[in-house]
Image (spheres, rainbow, N blue to C red):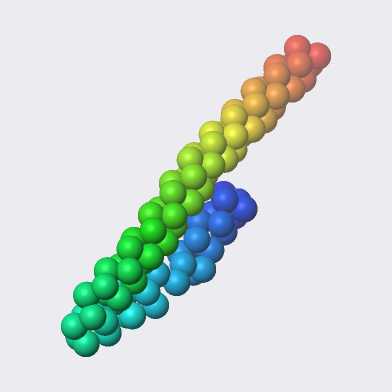
Length: 92
């Protein structure tokens, strides 16, 4: 099956997410016993991860739709081919 744009968007959602930096900052704040800073970075990281998850779920649904469209196109081609063969047989 050909690569669909939704698959690329799925990959990009992961690549563009920088929550790891916030988690690193949170870890550093915890090591320095800066609870407020750690909480802030943790909340930002969680928000980014939830956003990434939402985007991935959206693209997953789009991919399912693209799969269905590809299946529908293949079935339509198969029916058209069968009709053509039937017409050719009738004419022979």
